[in-house]
Amino acid sequence: MSGTVYLVGAGPGAPDLLTLRAARLLERAEIVFHDALVQPETLALASRAAKIAVGKRCGRHATAQRFINKSLVDAARKHATVVRLKGGDPLLFGRAQEEIAALRAAGVSFEIVPGISAAFAASAELDTSLTERGVSRSVAFVTPRIGDGQRANDWAASVLAADTAALYMAAGQAEAIAAALIARGLDAATPVVVVHDASLPSRRERAMRLAELGQLELRGSAPALILLGRVYEARVQRAERARCSRCASARAAGA
Image (cartoon, rainbow, N blue to C red; front, side):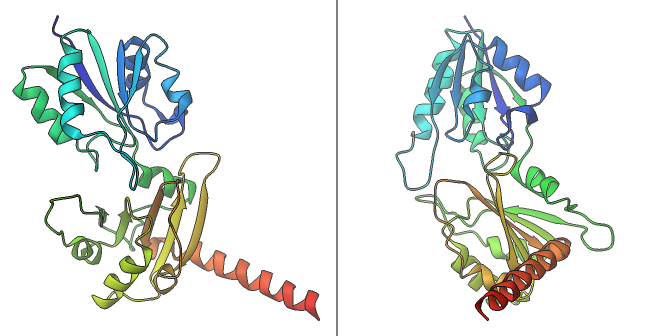
């Protein structure tokens, strides 16, 4: 048997943000290789499939990419419908190109099914356009994370060149990110919103200025996305007014 491997975007988390094509493939799937952040309700759609966790999380045991590549090729020789389920969109920071290369080298048929990335879900929940007219004409998706054996990348240059930026896999690097951007000339008063668990009931947000980002502790199990740019000015101003109001109430109570 020579099956087809589908590289499917699971979206930002909420199961109802799956595309119809993704949901239908999960229902048909005989085996699903899924990332660590895919929600149980999403996996439940693959009711007839064997489910194999192959996720990677910073600071935890991670499945080797070579093992994932081989597993996909082997599975396609046994099953008609193989799903590789990736968080967000499979082509954004998901190492999909390595899996595509392995499948192509093995002569295995494959198809890519796009998904909603976390930056889109987070900005939707913030009621903020990534490309507000007259404010933002460019968006950069970057990650400051560098894998073992990889050369350093100038992620800060991409942020500086764009009007709006989304920093993925940035938890635990807030201080270094703020310092690097300010040192390269970005205004310390640039609006920043940090969103945890975009699209999920556990979602949290913190709005601030770039100078304050370095004071945050972002380590933890929940994935964090850092959104940066003038489009978030109104959100930051609302947060500042709310903080001032709380401080005034605390002072009045103390008096």
